[in-house]
Image 1 (tube, rainbow, N blue to C red):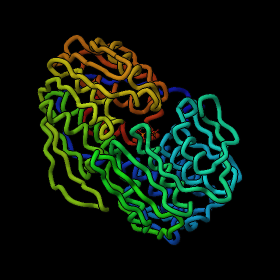
Image 2 (cartoon, rainbow, N blue to C red):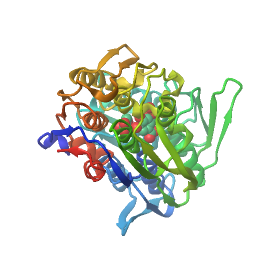
Image 3 (cartoon, rainbow, N blue to C red):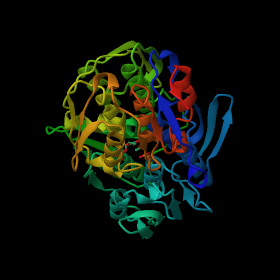
Length: 446
Ligand SMILES: O=C(O)C1=C[C@@H](OP(=O)(O)O)[C@@H](O)[C@H](O)C1
Ligand SMILES: C=C(OP(=O)(O)O)C(=O)O
């Protein structure tokens, strides 16, 4: 992993006229869940389009350590699962590297098994809050044998003999917390209920239903979703096709919008409505994004996107849109740097607990490159410079955060002066093909 390696800096230079047709790798959220559910289900699963990023491969390693057989065969991953309730105690620590999703979902999955499991991660993951998952697990009977201050990794869990089903109202809009509780419910007798006041990405619900779990969702008069899962059901292996990750597509997409004279096509992008906040916002800003060939693939909405460079104008992004674009704010801030007027982004407190404090990292990177912005406790305001005149020339600290690295390399494609990021090694956690893919479109990144 990159922590033990030398940092790999990179510099991006103004690159007009990006062109070409590309495919981004598989969706990270769906890929993690594909390994988790296929590893747990009885029988064989076949997964194509899986994201082979470091985060997802670590989830695969964890499932292997608990008894699943996982192998790559041609362009597919074949998983022979253990059967719900039959995970084995791993004989070593589960190392999740940089991955919040992998670690939190796996804590939920195994936290109610009567076995001892130790979770570790890199410096970034070890700073992130895990109490949000430990709290509901404790209510279900899990013993937290080890946790660092503030509920951080390394953490050791031991599940109860008999877990108690709970009804849990998620206190923060987080698909990871929702999913952790539902996964704990898989091996718990009775009905586990998660109440979600604000809808977050629904891949866990959809995929568990696809694997045969008894799960139902109802929306109440206030708009809160009540997700009920019958525990100890049978899950069966499936054939899965993972569509392209909209959170990765966001980088070439914004690059094409801001680099003058560009026209690109990104094929096979997941357009699940819980993930399309960035596209909605960019269209409001005046972006020329054409959604072509909308279709269903693997139970999800998918389409090809044609993107042409556009004159953008600042907008106010509604705070309630945040869950549907939570990982895209760094690159939205880059688009906003070239928009006429102000782009206001409220409701961003969750950005402070990602791979880095993304609110602080984005504001610092923008300021280092001459972009005016205001960072509040939970908001960001960016004042753009159409054409990018006078911008760039700065060095950006990425703090072990892939999305900060990719966002600022995109910034440098349309600023007057080049932009340098201090490290690109973390990009491999979510988008290993990022550099060659961007270069194939004509982006000058060295
Ligand atoms: O469930 C998931 O797959 C994810 C949920 C989001 O995290 P939170 O649930 O912490 O908001 C997101 O930031 C992460 O990249 C993936
Ligand atoms: C927040 C992210 O991932 P995770 O929480 O899985 O580390 C991300 O990919 O932007």
